[in-house]
Length: 220
Image (cartoon, rainbow, N blue to C red; front, side, top):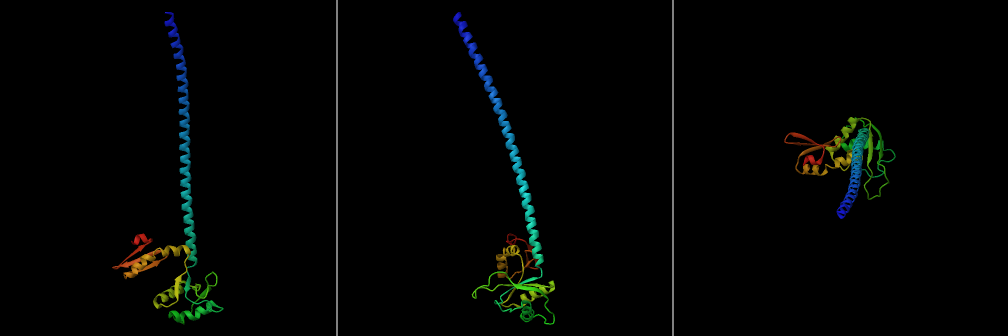
């Protein structure tokens, strides 16, 4: 009997120890659970903050794009009366480019000599003086009135010669228009009427119907 009581006493002691260990483990599990909950909350907070930053970054990017677009539009509007002329050899204009153009353009384009060309200012495009075997720099001509600009470009299209006349556009807008180069080549090969209009819109007339496109993908 003593042995039985001894065994029972030992089992009771072991059970108390096991009970204490179990309580300690339970406490540790609860503590770990609290830490996991806190970590999840922190992760969720960080994700929310990152999401907010991404939203702010997208908003700022959108605003920046709008500002850049507006600046480019203002730049092109300031060039509205400008004509870029390519093909005149370097130095042919002498000391006064405006006088040279007023004298030569009417004959070159078949313009009415009694309708004077009003040029506000003119100059060669910026850059180093090219070598003799390189393409000469363009003339940048600012006309006093927009109707004169229209008249010159219209006459240049109709007359056709070795001197080229173009609108004076910003670099960004030139690149946007160049995206239509391949589409324009294909339209020309097929004999389909087309034109590129400000700022960068391709208008195609086919079977009496005119369509407008703002990207080459739309044409395809």
